[in-house]
Length: 251
Ligand SMILES: *[C@@H]1O[C@H](CO)[C@@H](O)[C@H](O)[C@H]1NC(C)=O
Figure 1 (tube, rainbow, N blue to C red):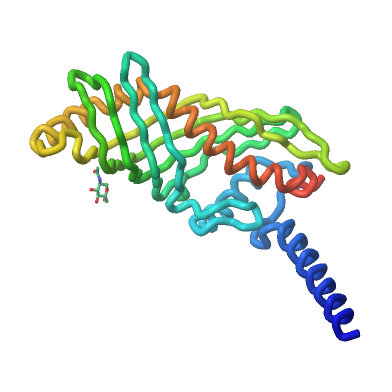
Figure 2 (cartoon, protein in one colour):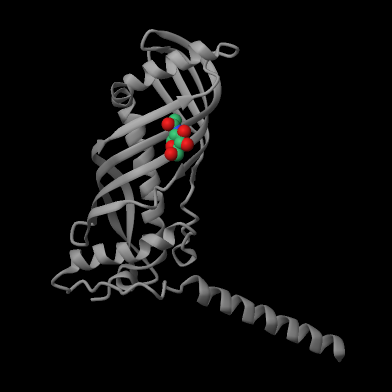
């Protein structure tokens, strides 16, 4: 008897736990005022909502399944610029990317598109780099820690998507980010140990790399656009795959 009761209550506890969990999983952040599709100022309302969400990004937003965003960690970023130049960045940590200024966040439900215009006043990047190949007029073959600061980096992009249906609910499935423009602002990087045992040459090379940084970043533009596009898609995509259009933007 006792065993049976015990099993029964264990079952009940499990059931309760599951129910509580699924209720928690679908909870919407209480501090966000939803924007209605019919709102005359839908776009303005969205901008305001993003402003309210912004300070919460630092520690992550569990309701949106968004991880801690300061630092933002990226898996390996590989750059193959052709002509035998290969760079790899691992354990990439991006600081203060959550402190962006947003000028546009336009969700176009009729066209299944989101357009945004973001400026990052200051971001710091730390990573482990390895670089092989010719950069400017150096033949590089080095690896070590990299540290960078970028001020006033602006990204203007469009995310395209399509409607998908799940249990009678419509979702906006975001499929790609088309970067319309990136302004790199003022970048300043330091690559430690570029030439092992030759700190002087390492420093000289870093100086020259930084003088030419804008041109270098321009060469790497396709890879950087791809990485930034995929990262933004991953984060915003999570919100839209979690909540239906109706749940996000009631009629
Ligand atoms: C980036 O900025 C931080 C904080 O201001 C500074 O300590 C660091 O040396 C800078 N890194 C580079 C590569 O300029």
